[in-house]
Image (cartoon, rainbow, N blue to C red; front, side, top):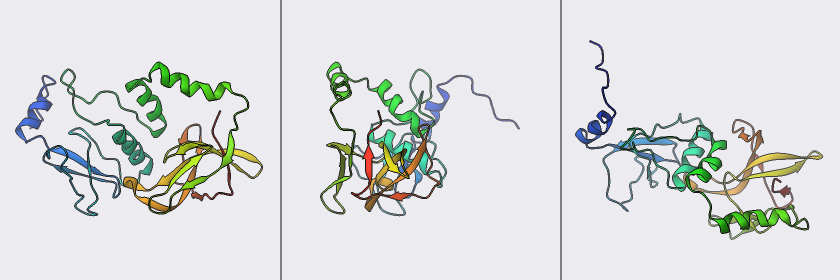
Length: 216
């Protein structure tokens, strides 16, 4: 017997009500998601495998394959920005979501438009020709609470910078934290081409001797 076709978009919400609205809790350390009941706000939900805190990604979150590190990094960046996957009342779907990691910055700018003051501050360094663009990796603190900066600006996991190697500047994606924001002893980078990060390549471990710069 064939599946009964959906006649209106509210069916999905009714289904969640009947089943107790199971949520998809994601563990970015294990790169896995688990269906669980909705826990109270502020209640820590540990991963069944690694016991690290999980993040409620919503009822419509579809976990990427475990091996797809780029998609998991995309989901983690969306989670940090407060983006979840719940169906809207009007459409019954979560709505527009970025398909790739490279689309996340533009998506967040559309979702959270910067104020006039933020826009001015972001443009101000580019108008000052004397401001240096090249520098060295700066580490503040020690493992496991270290942080990284480049020319006074914070370097976070997923930051797009350029590395001088073999006589020319190469775009890279900086990685200073592991899955689930877990600390790692030494930062590294993956090559990046046309705003796409190649996580299947061999990572390059970074030190204070490497020449780095922010893209123009």
